[in-house]
Length: 432
Image (cartoon, rainbow, N blue to C red):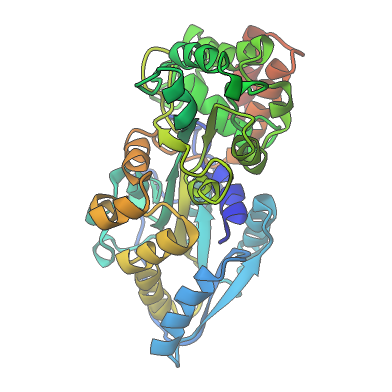
C-alpha cells in the first residue's frame, strides 16, 4: 500500500466517534446477541487469495512472496481491488452475497468488521491462534463483533498534529499546544514573524468525504461530546458537540483555517504543509516520511491533537484481515493470516509502507523510535483514541455526518441546526 492509497483507505477507516454503536441491524441471520457464535472448523489446504486495495509500493506482494516461497503448494494470489474504498467494499459485498469463493482472506477497513460479521460474510476466529495479548488493546477491539474476534489487526492508525518546530521556536514558544485556544494563540505569535508571511494557522480534511467524518468526530470528542451515548443512542444534539463543531465553523470564519481547506483531503493538506502554507496540520503518520523529503525536512515534528480543555481525541483507524465464510482451503488461510499479521510482517509494513503497527513492542523498540521519531506520539494517539464503532449501517451514518458537517462549515446551516438535523438522521439509521 503506497502512502496515498493507504491514506485513502485509512481515512475511511477512521471514522465516526466514540460510540457510534448504532443498533446492530444486519440480516436476520446475524449472529445471536449472546455472543456464543459457533467457531467453524478450518479445514482444507491449497491455493488461496488475498483481497485488498491496489498496492503501488510492492510491500504487500513482497510479504506474500515470502509466504509463497515457503509454501509452494499453498500459494497466495494477491487480488488487487480498486483504490477507491467504496468500490473495494462493494466488490467484497457482491462477492459475499453470491457466496463466491473468489476471495479467501479479506483486508477490511476497521469499520467494516461489524457489518461483515453481522451478515455472516466472515468467520469467527479462534482467540488462541493469534498473539492478541501482544497488540495494543484498542486495535484488538476493532476486530471484534459482539465480544468475539472476527478479524485480526494488520495495521492501526491515529491522527497527529504536525507543526513547524522552527517557527514556534523563533516565536519563543517552547511547549506544543494542548488546546485549540493555545494553538490559535501560538499561530498569532508565529504569524508576526517575517518568515511566516502569508501562512495560515491550521487545516485538516474538510472535503465532503470520509475524512470530514473523521475530523468532525474528533472535534466533537475533543470537546467532551459524542455522536451517541454509552448505550448507542444518537446524542449529537448537545452543547458539547456544538462546541466541537463550532471550533471548526468559527475557525473557517476567523481565518484560522484557510478557505481553500474546504477542499482538502489528506494529500492536499500534506502538500500545503510541505510547501510552507500551514503552521499546524492534522494528518496521519504516513505523512511523516513524505515531509522528511520536502522543503520542511528538519523543521517539523508531531504532537497529540489538541482539544477544547486539554489534549484531544483521535479517531482510531487501520485495517484488519478476516476470513471469508465462503472460502476454500481455510486451514491454509488461517496459517497465512497468522503469518501476515505477525510482528515480523508488521515491522516490514512499518519500515516500507509507514503503516502503524498493532504490536506494543515495536513502539517501544528504541532503534525504531530513533528511525521513526513519531512512534511514541502515535502510540499515545492510538491508546487514547475513541473506541472504534461496531456499526452495521455504517455508510448511512457516515453520509449523514458528512452532509450536515459540510453544510455547517459552508455556512449553509448553523451548527445548532446541522446537529439537530444530524440527530434526526442518525435516529433513522439506528431504527433501520
